[in-house]
Each structure stands twice: as C-alpha cells, then as structure tokens.
Length: 445
Image (cartoon, rainbow, N blue to C red; front, side, top):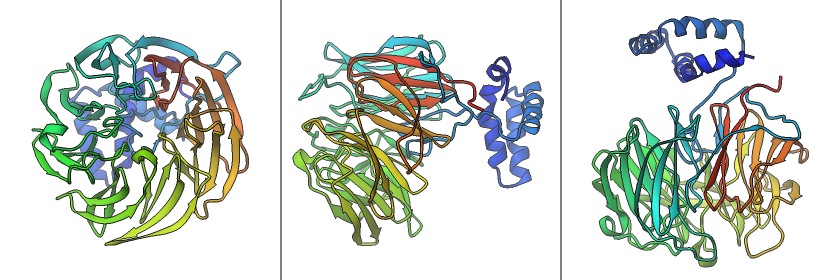
C-alpha cells in the first residue's frame, strides 16, 4: 500500500501511468511518456515508476467522467480503496447543497459536476472534488415538475476532454467549457429535434461517441455535433424513454442501444438508422434503467414487467429468457462474472429486494429485503450499494449469498441516486440535494 502522504503526491499521475501500461507497443509508451514530461511530469515519473516496480498491484485511482463511469457499465476499475470500515463508517470530507434532483456526479481532473433545482431554477454545478468548494455554476429557468416525486434534473453531466455536456428534464442541452463554465453552445431539444418531452422529462444523460452526442430523444434517439450543437439526425418525434444510450458495435458499425418509451432499439450512429427493435411495453412507458449490452445480447429491465435477456442481430431479435423477478424501476443492475446485481421493485409496491441473477438463465441466486429502491455500483470485486434510506453498504460480489463487508447510515432523506467512487472518495446525494464526500482511501489488505 502506498503511504497516504505519498499517495496525495502521485495520485494525479496514475491515469497517465495506466495509459502507459495499456499501450500496445514500446513506441506508444515512449510517446505517452514524452507527452507527460512535456506537461511537467518531471521527477514524479521516476517516483511513480519506482513504486510501480516495488508494488505489484498498487492502488489505482480513476476519474468518473459520466453516468455509469468510463466503461459505461456502472463498474469502476479503481483498486486499493477501503471497503471495510469501523462502526462509524468512512470519514465525511465535506458536504454541499446542490438543489433538488436525482442527477449523479461526474469527476474529472479534480472537478465534480452535478445538477439540482431550487425555486424553479436549474443549476449546473462544478465543485472542487477534494473540498466541495464552488469552482463555477450556471443557472437557468427550468420547472421542478414534481410528478409523484420531488422532481428536478435526472440526467448526469458528461465530461469529454475540456467540455462538459448537460441535459435538463425540459430539454435544455448545454456545452460548457469545463474549466470555467463558459457556454460554448446551447439549444432545446424540443425545438431543434421536435422531440416530445416524456411525461417525467428527459432523464438520459448525453453519450459522447466520436464527434457527436447521442441522446434519448424522440422514438429512437437523436445526435448532435458535439463541437457545434448542430443536429446530425433525429428520429420521429414520439416521446423517448428515460435511459441513457449504451454503445456497442455490430458488423463493424458503431451503434447504440436506445431504450425508448415502447421498445429497445439498436441504432446505427452514423445516420440514426434502426437496425433492430425489441418491443417492450410497460405502464406509462417508463423504461428508465439502462440496458446492459454484452456482445450480441442486451439485458433490459422495467419495474412492472421484469427483465429479459435479448439476443440481437441485423433486423431481428430473440428473447433468450424473461423473468418477473428483476424489475428495475430506474437504477440499472451491474453485471459481474456472469451475474446481475440490482434492485427489484417499484414505488407502488411494498416488496423491494436486492437480488443476484444468473446471466445465462435468469435464475435468482439470492434476495435481500430492506434497502428500498436503492442503487448499486461496483469496483474491485465489491458492490457499493446505497439504500433508499441513506445506508451505504459494501458487499462481496458473490452469487453464493448476500455478504456485507460494511454498512453504515451516511445520510437521511430519499436516496435514489447511485453513489460514485472516484479517486478514493465515495460521493452520495439525496433528493433534497445534500451531497456528501466520504474518504475511502487506503486498503483492506
């Protein structure tokens, strides 16, 4: 384990080291190293490389640039964080108030981005990830729209290089300069694409793919140029779903799975052409949990219908299995080692259970009551679970049984927003807009 004092010195360089280690050839390694030295790596290079040599598996810290993380699957590659706590839990580093809403956080280069609403005004926040202090903010008029819940923004900011993209529930789409909040362009999707606003507003976060943003707007999505905001393509104007588009490749073409109001679409990203469609009708067209795509299969889940594993190909789909025992209301499962872990249940029913399902068969391996409509993310073979009531748990990711390693009450209020692990910190928020940062730097070994 790297000593704490030294960790603070070298943590900002781990992403570059990881890039070097992932490069496929020596020429690429030398290129990255030269670039790093050019921006001031200096003696830190020697220091970090020395530790990489001394430690076979050092702590690896990682940013979280968008909804569901850098791999868009809810799983962090971060290692060496502390998942076993005492009865008091991890130390709270800071607390902030960001306004009503369910937007999660993105963390890049020491900055944290999120959204909230107060008095009918949305605010996009950029905070210092280490201190919680405001770096910049931008506010604009947007209704709270509290239909059977607190309301406020549901999408999470997406960071791409020096830009950050945000989407409000009323369709306000912004491109900001990440460092200072300068507005580079803005538009409203209901005007530029004529997309119908879903009943509970736009909630899917912008997906960056190459030169474009992919959005769950209209029946099967829309795309805009990420640099200019120009609409590149859009689908018919029926209301979309609430999930974030998920990228995949089919027959060499870049595609996205878009969970719309009444179906799951496989859409070609170059022109928006749907390549396949799986009908999926639900109460009030609430398809909110992101599909989990693995190869030529996608897992979809909705609170009143349950879940299904769908196999897809050009112009066709096939349901491999379907179950009533994993219905995600809005928070997606995570897939680890051939199993799905997630919350089954909805606001209309008393029974809500955290479950583990076998990916191959849909068989329930275990269930656990008491977490309400919570959420789950994962890192380093462990599940990080936030209960609806503000209890934070770390579990061993195993299909054998529900096995908590730590659990502690960290906040109050309604907690539907998934926690985020980034650079040895866990960030949690509630519906009222209380955002806390917890210190989990260190190691259980």
